[in-house]
Amino acid sequence: MGQECTTCKTCTDQEEIKAEQSISANHIVTKTANGVKDKIHKTSQKSTNQTATTSQTNNNNTKSPQIQKKYINQKYKRKEGRKSTLDSIIFNSKKKSEFEEELRQSINSIHERKNSFGGSSAGSSFLSESESCISISNKLFIDEVNDSPSKKYEILSKLGSGSFGNVYLARNKFTDEKVALKQIKKSSANLLSDGEIKDEIEILKNLDHPDIVRIIESFNTKNSYILITEYCEGGELFDQVKNQLSETQIAVIFRQLLSGLAYLHSNNVVHRDLKLENILIHEIEKSKTTGEDLFNIKIIDFGTARIFDKNRKPQSIVGSSYYIAPEVLRQKYNKECDLWSVGVILYMFIVGHAPFDGCDDEEITNNIHRGVYRKNDRRWIKASKEVKDLIQKLLTYRPSQRLTAMQALNHPWFKMTDSNILYDNVPKSDVIKCIKNLLTYNINYKLEELFLAYIIHNIPREKEAKSAIKLFKLVNENGDGKLRKNELKKTVLKFVTEEFLEKYDFDGIFAMMDGDNKGFINYEEFLRAALGRKNILTDDILSYAFSYFDPEGCGYIKKKKIKSIFGNKIDNITFQSIFDEIDLDKDGKITFEDFKNMLLY
Image (cartoon, rainbow, N blue to C red):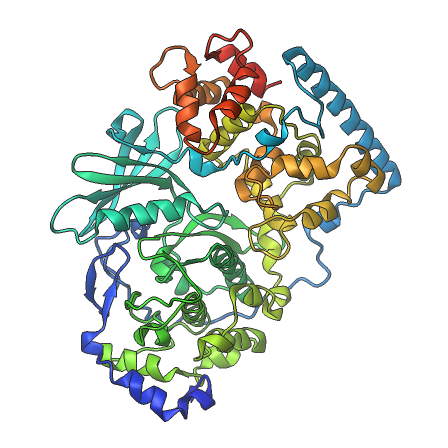
């Protein structure tokens, strides 16, 4: 009683349901977050020995989504007529003219400094055609180090533990950045294979999105694999389900979640274990308009993630109780299973409990098989019709009829709830500075781009990069994490004229930002251009970066180190050419002074 099917047509398909129910819940095996095979289980309450950030451990336990009865879903709070940060900045013709003159002066100044080192002006480059084709991405620097991390990282505290090993809060001794240090034990007790661990690392190396956890580097020691990732100090998203979040607060979270998911799927990656424990809160901010807490989130745990093939569906049953999609139980699924999990999580935020619950595993899986969930709960009744429509379209039984991540991002609920409000806590002065940096961005040497890319990937982002990160999300209107030329041009035309962009070769500037030559700007490519070098390239940061390229501590960068980074991606003739541009005295060395002067012009 009181239950309704998500898709009546599907529920009347007796043959399909019969086939699904033939899979006994007692025999469903799931590969949990840390890769250890175990039966789907149900935990009655949150483990008492876990800290607020224990989800970085990716342990076996999937917490029960039973939420306190006092939880009451609040109606969304929408402020009519509110303008976004970008829309509120209005440059009339006079203001544009003044800004353009300021840009011209900056470009001329850069040109003079570059000439003293041997370079070109903004909007142009001395890069040859072969050099321009060389891809520069952050994965070039995510090394597997065959050494102990203790030389570089200081362990501060233990965040949690699981059957695979431990996770610690650590500090980079050189940059003072807090990181999460995930230790995976090499032992017969740990069912993770070397291949599975390396698959996770390889997938993370290829991801570059503000709502996906950033891997910094990895270590391969005698007894463990160690992953260094950014630290999320706000704890698990699970802890917020019991709170009285408004629909605006919830929409802010799910806009980020779907943006990260759209990016994953566009890169042919399926997560396969999306759940509340695998979404961490990176930071909590106060809304300037409503005073509510707004949550910056990160998707974590790619231990079960895989590259998907449209023509070949995975066969293994992978996932966690409550969140697993019915097609996964049938062992015939693809990326659409992630959207089902998003629907489950959204239902939990709106209603306060899991949509497919039960007294035991068999009842849970039977409910998932049928695609049936309650719609007579008072919290469901109070929720907006828009969010209920979105949930229904995410929990659509047939994967082919389920919303994609991009379609979900365009759902009316996100506009109605003002879900972009998180990105409006950006000072207008910071926006203008970022736009100025973008329009005066200049790369003359491939090694200059290489050095800058390493620095941007590794520096702390709590202060200098915060406004630039939000601007990236604002400019990337469709939310897929890939900034295209028309999106960026639409934004900069708020500040300058079309004639200015033509004169100073906007197309050339965009191509210069596109370091990996994919036709769009990734997250870190944007940061390289948007952040002012003088503000971030302190002596400490420059010394730290230089030490990476000079691992032997010789006081200069050797040719063989640069060659090892590029590997076989470029031929010897091209490599010699890009090195000789910097090595003016042809002694095969790059000194710290040359390194510093090139980056600071």
